[in-house]
Amino acid sequence: MGAGWAGLLVAVVGVAGTLGAALLTQNRADRTKRMELRAAAEQRREEREHAEELRRVELAEQRRRENLERRRACYIALNTAARQFLTSMTSHLHALRRGEDAEVSLADLEASRLAFRDSYAEAQMVVPEAVLRTCSTAKSRLNAAYGTLRQYGAAPAAHPGELAGLEDEFHRGVWPHLREMKRSMRADLGVDDD
Image (cartoon, rainbow, N blue to C red; front, side):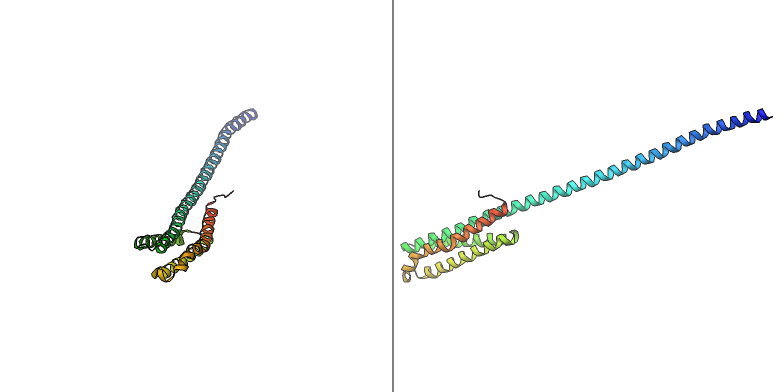
């Protein structure tokens, strides 16, 4: 019976070992599969986060470009309107000095003034504060020149000497501020003057 029991014991151990090895192998395979699934899920999560970050960066860049383009268009309109306003003042001054009918030049002047006012109003909503300060100074100078011109233009015959020096006064008093306004706009846009 000793040999029979020993054979039975060997058979039981062999069957248990075979079954245990299958269970152990299955257990390890399940654990490996779970680890692979977790790693794949983690990789997908990282890829989603990376894609979301790329999307945020692209949106921020798009907003920056749109804002820059909006400021650029505003700067062009404001610079053009300011220069046209001063040019219209000079044209009206010439008409007054020559004693011509100044109604046409006055109408052009008023149209230029209104165009500048509208461009400046837009700039107040779009332009950074540093640039807006130089625009405000230029606006003040243009409006002061306009007020002086309208005062002398109301009775040009009474102020012939003042009208003669007014153009020079406009150019000395206004052009430097228009140049400074243009310089600050260009600096904000990143345009290099070198």
